[in-house]
Image 1 (cartoon, rainbow, N blue to C red):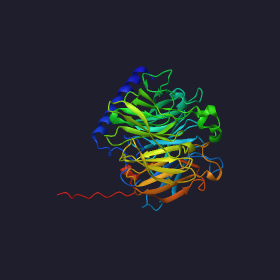
Image 2 (cartoon, one colour):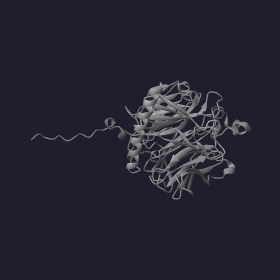
Image 3 (cartoon, helix red, strand yellow):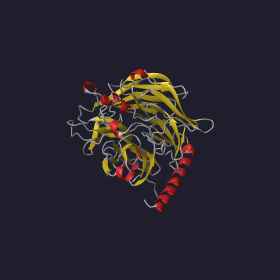
Image 4 (spheres, one colour):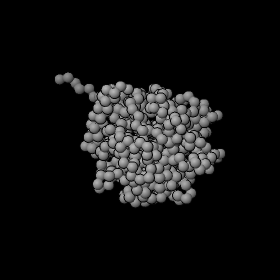
Length: 458
């Protein structure tokens, strides 16, 4: 990209982001968001979601063996409630992992951690039957060597993607990569390291350059990223990796605070033990985010102190850390009062009261399956959905390798199962990440259109 063009893009993007940030600050906290794990820039589903899109890993010998987007009808008023109504295979196995919607929710971006492909699905033309709109195959070349596209996160007119690795040593040093909603490459932002802090303040022992998840707090002009491990680890058999002392050293120990507008790293925080998903508070008075560390089974809060400095603090254990329950996905409720934490090894979900975010209290626990990974909850907090797969080589073996989608109602006290789909029995594969769809997002695509009253001429 030419230098003057980069400047134009940067100025235009900054203006758009500033405008959106101002808008976000001016509006109540619940007006610009949907299911609580999504970007605050995204349109909101009001009420009942119609569909859950499950980005699913292909399994050799199961169905067509390909990665696919599976559409499930989750509206209780639908005749197809609880059923798979569409599958869309993308060719081969790419280590399907995470997905994310654009800010206008017209397109769903989904990544392959092994092949580095990005699949862009049209989910607005017919929400019940997504189509494959575009495939990006030059992610590594365009980004300057980033491998493993993970989180695909919406900013105004942009998708920002966290990489997990690089094509030099397949380790954990990596970057953020920015695209337009149309799929055009914009820029790469490398995570700071001891060798190149890029102006960031190193506040503790680590500046490892690792990456995993990303969230934005527009009201504070902040992006927050976490850290995991590189290709050489996440494509290794889980049992083998646990026995490999050198491999176990190759996990991230940092959370990085970035300037949202300039995309420059500001501060590196020590959060040892592979901090994975980041979820940020929604209410305007709550300037904090939560993460959990997979290897040490801790809940951490990333918060802005009274001096405007960002800090990280260990605020609680998850289960028995000595048994390494492996906390994976988390979700903050829309009112910031609760935190769901899934633990892969014991197949359980836990609910923590966040009335005091510095002191989360465990109030509920339920076993979902023999393994569990992702949770997605509705914005109103009344429904929760779970899927099973972590990584192809990390899922459990034999009879413990359950692969499912499960839907629950949550009444504030207990989860009540509504239906379950066995992904192996249905020959679909390994169920991973979920995103929601609804006809209400696209007025012209509603199944029934109310007729407008005719006004008689006088």
